[in-house]
Length: 389
Image 1 (cartoon, rainbow, N blue to C red):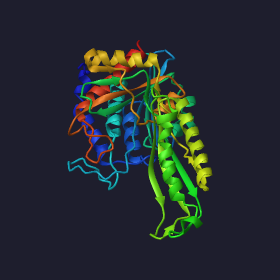
Image 2 (image 1 turned 120 degrees about the vertical axis):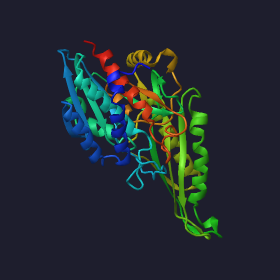
Image 3 (image 1 turned 180 degrees about the vertical axis):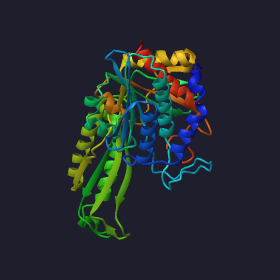
Image 4 (image 1 turned 60 degrees about the vertical axis):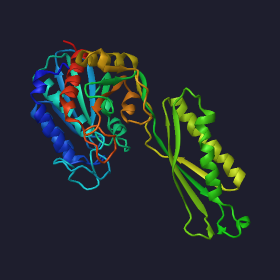
């Protein structure tokens, strides 16, 4: 691997930053300590720093040369509401909150790149380092965009990176086109007519209607979606009733829909609504379906920007260690919101198996510190590639 020597020499310092963030996790829009740490380091290294972008986001700006070219490099800062099960020294000090997705590592890698590039301004243009809050379902990217991100920092393209457990360390995954799915959450309220369980003929049972609807929703993908289009409809909650001998008045269903294309995302929701109407009529109940605000669109990499990332990764680790055109994940990522406004690319960086590489969102997860110099070097080389002097 072609790790930059100056970054390799800073490996221990990057580990210290990463583990400090891991030990002090903060949920979305609560990343005050993390944001202060990021901003203070960027200021120490001489970057122009903007705090409070999208509530708790931090943006660092670095300029060199005379070119008007401008690119964005983004990392996420928030943690998850998970109780950490690890016992190492840098485990979470906040009960019920942990960095179980590697955002601590993402932040540390981008900081490592910012420090190097501030000391070696051998590029021509403007670099915008985006430390985003609230990626985990709270819409931090859209909060930054609503706060005028693209007007205040006119990047022409933007790039992101996520560690990927199960992929060996020293390996990149890059996919042109859809790389991650949309994510929407729905709530369905079924209102019937409650009654005595011994006299069901005098009731309109929302449980029976709900059970029928759960089964019917499985046909949205199986019978209404092109088999070559990725989509998911999952009912994850079914709540109704309190007693053995009472048919309840209402039942609630909750769940998620996923899709790899915008058109499929919209069509999936329309199919769901039609099934609700049909079950409502068939069972004599009222069904109200609501799609919650703040859903994430599909993450779609633009081809040219994906090729740029492929070239940089190949130079770093060799062509044999760059997986091109991987199958997309049905997980979601709000970096997609940035990509709805500008071209860009979101890549995966192998996090390794076992300790330091277990499944994302797992209470035993920990970011693999061996990745820190490689991720920081990737960001530096991407900046050099896109803003060549």
